[in-house]
Image 1 (tube, one colour):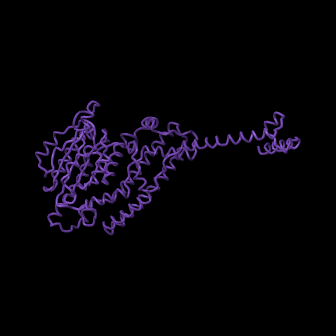
Image 2: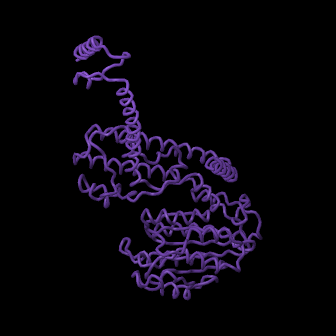
Image 3: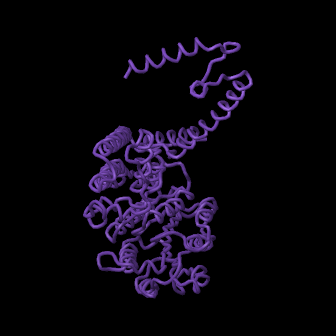
Amino acid sequence: MRKIVVFSVLFFILLAGCSQVPNNQEETSESLEAGTVITPDDDEKQKEQDESEDPDEEINETVVSQEFETDPLPTTVEELAALEQGKYARKVFNNKDGAEREGAELLDYLGEDMAEISSNPSDTELEYFFRETLKLVQDDYVGEEEILKNIKFQLLGSPEVEDPRYQFKEQLNIAILLDASGSMAAQIDGKSKMAAAKETITAFMEELPEETNVALRVYGHKGTGADSDKELSCNSSEIIYGYSPYEKEAFSEALNSVQPAGWTPNGLALSKAQEDLADFIGEENTNIVYLVSDGIETCETEPVQVAKQFYDSNIQPIISVIGFDVDSEGQNHLKEIANAAEGLYQTVQDEAELANEFNKINEMAEAWKEWKEKGMLELDLQEKQNDMDIFGFATRDEAKLFEEQSSLRYIFEALLSTGEISQETFQQLQEINSNYHNAMRTEVDKLQSKLEEWNKNSYKEALQKLEEKYEENQTNNS
C-alpha cells in the first residue's frame, strides 16, 4: 500500500514539473483531470471556498462534542451527597423491581429514560452513556454537611453546642405535621401508610415526658384527589390536637378521625405550624417540628420558601422531614424542604423505620426531662449520643454504592444479552463502573476515618472540625 502511495505522489510531481504554470501556481487533482490550469483568480476563489468550509467543519465538530455533554462525575463525598436521587434508585437492584427482570424486559422497564449508545462508541460517548445511565439509578448519600446536622440534633441540650436553638429551654414543644393526602392509603406490608403512621405516632406520644407540649396538625385531609376538589384540599390543614401535654383518649379520638383524602399542600402545613407556635418564642422554648409526608407538593404552597421563613423566625424551630415510602422525585423535593430549614431529612420505607426515627425524638425528650430534674445542671450526654451511632452514615453510603454499582451491571448485562452493545463495549462500561465506584468507596472510607478519629477525642472537637470543614466548603463553592 505504501509503494502505491509513493508512486502516485512521484507521478503527480512529474506532471506538475512538466506544466508551465504562471507564477509557479500548483494544480489541483481536479484541474489535472480536466486538463486545465488554475489562474491566480481561480486560486483566490479556491482559498475563499476553503476558508468558508473550515468554520463549518468546526461547527460540526462542536455539535458532535455537545451531543455527548453531561454532568461530571462526583469526586468527593460532598459532591456525591449533592446529587439528586435517580428515578430507579434501588429499584433495579431490588429483586421485586429489577434484578428478576432480564434482558429486554429490564430495558423495557427503563423505557425511554435510557440514553442511546452507538454500535462502536468513542471514549467520550462511553463516558456520556455511563453518566446518563448512572443518573437513573443514583442513590441518595450523606455528606459532611448532613452529618453536621445530625451531630447537632444528637447533641441537643448539650452545653457543647453554642447554637441557641439547640439548647434546652424550660419548655419543650413537639409538633407533628401529618400528610393526609390520598396516597397515604397505599399499602405497605398489608397495612396502609396512614394506619402505620397512626400506630407509630401513638406509640411515640405515649413515651414522651408528661411535661412535653405536643401538637398534631394534618393537611390535605379534605376533598379527594380529583381536580374538582383541588382547591378545597390544597386549602385544608387543621391542628387536631394541642398544644398541650399528651392525653391518650383525646389524642386517639382526634387521630382516628383522619383518613387519607386529597392533595398535598406541604407549604400550607408549615405555614400554619408557624402560626401555631407564634406564642412560643425560641428564647424560652425548644421547638421541634416534624413534617411526615409520602410525596411531593401537589398544590402551589411554596414549601421550600415557607420552611426558610419559618426557620428564620423568632420561634427558632428545629425542622425535620421524614419521607415515608417516597419515590425519587418525592425524596428530592422533601430533602429540599429540610435543607431550606437546615434540618434533617430521612427516608423511611416501612413502619419499623418510621418508629426508629420517632425513637430518636423520644431519647432527646428523655434527655430534656433529665436536664430539668437535675435543676438545669450541665449533663453528660456522651453515652446517649454514642448509642445513637451518628457515625454510621459512612457504612450506609458504602452499601448504597454497592447496590448502585450492581444496578448498573444489571443494565449493561441486559444490553449485552439483547445485542444492543458488543462484548467489548460491555467490558469498557464495566471498567468505568468499577473504577468510579471504587474511587467513591475510597472517599467514603476517608470520611469514615476522619469521623472515627474525631470521635475518639470528643463530640465537641468533632462538631468544631465539621463546622470548619462546612465553612470551607461554602467558601470554595461561592
